[in-house]
Structures are given as C-alpha cells and as structure tokens.
Length: 165
Image (cartoon, rainbow, N blue to C red; front, side, top):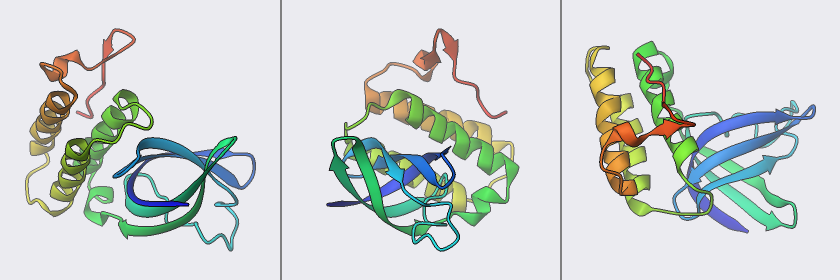
C-alpha cells in the first residue's frame, strides 16, 4: 500500500457507486485509481476526493490498475469554490496538469508549483481581473518546469488550451 498527498484533478462516475479518480500525487506523479463505492451513503471515501482539493490518499496497485482505499482531505479551498474568477483559474491549472502530465512521472518542482498556485488562489486578495494574469503566470512556470519555451506551446490537437476568461 502507498500513501501520498494528491491534488484531485478529475472524478468520473463508473457504474452506480464507483468512480475513476485522476490525481497528481507528490511522490508518484499523475495516476488514476478506482474508488469503489464512493457514491454510497456510508462510503468512507465520500467527500474526501473532491475535484480541486488536496487530499492524502492511500492506494494499492493491482493487475487492473490502482485502487484507492484511503482518502483524507487536507484542503478544500472554499474561497476558490465560491469565486467564479478563482474557480476559473483553478480549472485552467487543473486542465493543464491533466492534459500535459504523463502518468507515473513525479516531479517535485511541478508539485510545489501546483500546490503553491492553488494556495495562493485561496489566500490571495486580488480583484477578479487578476485571475487572468495569475493563470498566465502559472502557465509560464508550468511550461518552464516541463522544459517548454513558452505557454503558447500548450496545444491540444493543434488548438490552444482554453483559458477561463
């Protein structure tokens, strides 16, 4: 069993009660794992694997992939969730991480950049129009950490990643 801190990037319903959860973890990089029974009323994982949250996860690796068996939320970031501009910037950060990071490739610099960006979004006092420059700044740091010259290199099937503004 492995334990690590993780940013929850995506949660997708599978069947009636399970979910496929995509995480960017501190020690294992990006991974996807099955959270069995997460949508059941008495599920122990319920509420701990919310998108754009910082969570300690425990998972096991098996023949059919990773299975998340423990989760404890560390940061929910309520100011991000209650402010459209902050939420848009957080989703932009999440989209970049989800689309451009390879599975199983941990990077301590990217981890630090991502967590500090989300914490700054939560605690910073800035007007909504600053969210655009904040997201652009994250894209520049993200691109540099990946070894790319400029954030303009961030394309999906030849089209730039949509910004939230």
